[in-house]
Amino acid sequence: MSPEKLATIEKQARDLARENKRAEPAIKKVYWFPNEDEVRLLEVEDDIARALSQRVEPFYFDPSPSDDLPAPSAVALIRSDEFGQLELPEEWGAWDAARELEIPR
Image (cartoon, rainbow, N blue to C red; front, side, top):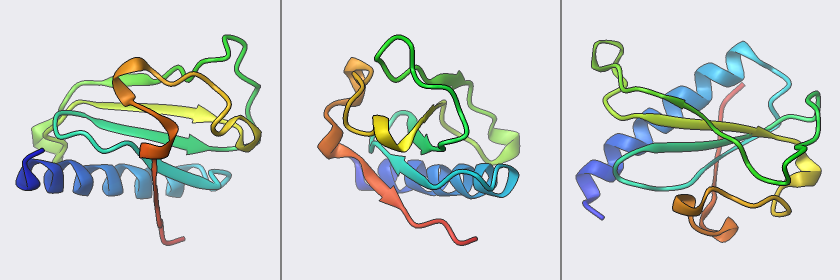
């Protein structure tokens, strides 16, 4: 992975995580699955329904350079008891690739 590209993606991931947490205070944790071409976030919130498919189902968003979002992004919501239990999208890799992002309140 290119360190420069990965740093850009990580910055976007942190910015998105911070804004999502601000908009939805019930988010307990945010995990980032590093990739240099796409932001992949997993947000943990217990005020949502359980996954019926037994899979993580991300929402996908196009890049928006004018909003300082240069890369496409994928954001998924799960409950805390589903962490490590659901099937991840194949391209995300394994659960042990997840990095918890510390998001200031």
